[in-house]
Length: 310
Image (tube, rainbow, N blue to C red; front, side, top):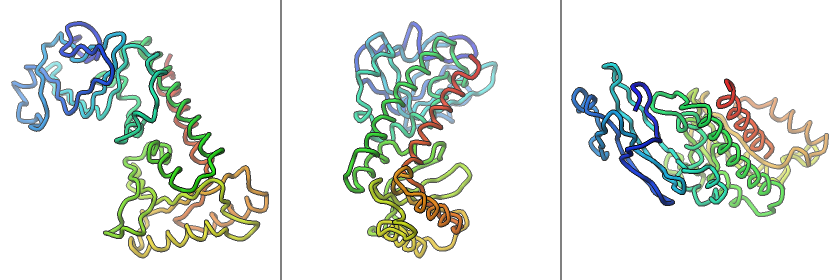
């Protein structure tokens, strides 16, 4: 290992991954320098591996695949303490492996939320420096391919599925990151002060400290019929009224309803939607194009962050 770089490839690995679906949970990688000076700062409930300075902890061979969950890297460089936490890393021996994997098989346990939210960090080393340009290009190719596949699934579900709310609840639970890119946390169907029957579909906690409660209605239902609120929109607004009674007045709380498709609204209905939103202080009604716009924002962010200095 070079003095200022902690990589995840190379020789003399502590682990050599040759097969599929290998996983390592709650592991701490450290060295004798850290143990000697900061032993009391290591989590007691993790498995701790003390590595030599020239040791690479995980080597994934050509046909291998490994997941590292809740991994800590504790290191000393020039007598300075460095701590790096990686909530989730997905490592492939070859990028083409991605084509063989169904996104749904890895959608559980907030997989995609962590994957995209920590995109930059999980493809860099312990000090957040890109390893090299080749690795950067491979990572860019992998993530753009992955997000394209997820986008196809979301788009097809939105535009072709006539099912009711549960299908869309399940989809956004799998890919909750697209509800609010960059959110600190997104929770599916949270309980409000013990109320089990009036739960929001999602609760978003933003980096700015705001909470957003989300109610979803299927794309096939319009928010307005002409200038009148649709039955589904009225039902969603009643839900939010119930939440407000439970939560109380709080300027840091916002509410969002996702319903309908903007392209299917008449000009009169588009004006009615715009007028309604302008009259609200802490409530917004958006159509399902909002989710697809977030996918595009993430794609743009990947390109900017990973390819900006190429």
